[in-house]
Length: 307
Image 1: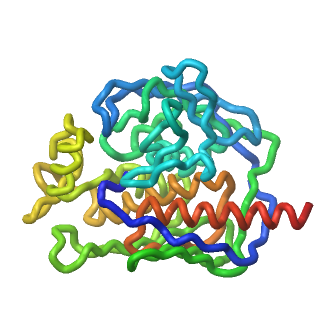
Image 2: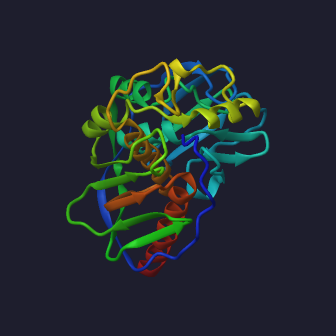
């Protein structure tokens, strides 16, 4: 979740890419429940992770909406990127999906039906830690189908209003993400940067615990709009003019780490593995999703060309 507003992204077409066969797909060994309160609405909600068949991907199902159909966790389903990522439309909609998707992608769970009895997942502590731990505890099983993978041959960049998000070719089989966070010289959040290889162990140890954050004046405005009225500074990272309010950081660069967590969740909307080095400067959900769109189009073009 990104509580700091970002302008809409500039859409671009990705250059030539190469598709290659990847690892075997995984799903959960057993269902698992998560109970909590939504960060946006403050209402109690239950989420259930269920195993799914090969090549089905991740989808959200609103069990509280009569006749609702599963919403694929794909970029084509995105209907909102203002401060958080939203999938679906009308009553059949789920918002703030990025923390759940980050946990599934970071822990390499490829096929999963996510049942939810409300408009958003449990917010928990604003991170993906409990989701990642639950997925780890349930365990995964290998499936016969192979996970599609996109390996770039040229860089892809999206940008808007001084923010940029690029992915560059690299050797190997993993995704690497570098994030440079900079809100300017007068911000209570100091400039910070981090580079992280995205593997299940690294994700769980270095990223999953990192919580969403907001500036105090932004938090007050959001609560005035009815968003997060139940939250106190001790329950979410709130930065006032003099620094963090009634809370302590888990990492000195926790905001930058949470930005990478959000990126992992948003790029999971591609529905395939990425091999490359993502470099982000001041980017948020609009740019994250726009990069996912560009890469998805490139993947589809390459798949059509190869037949």
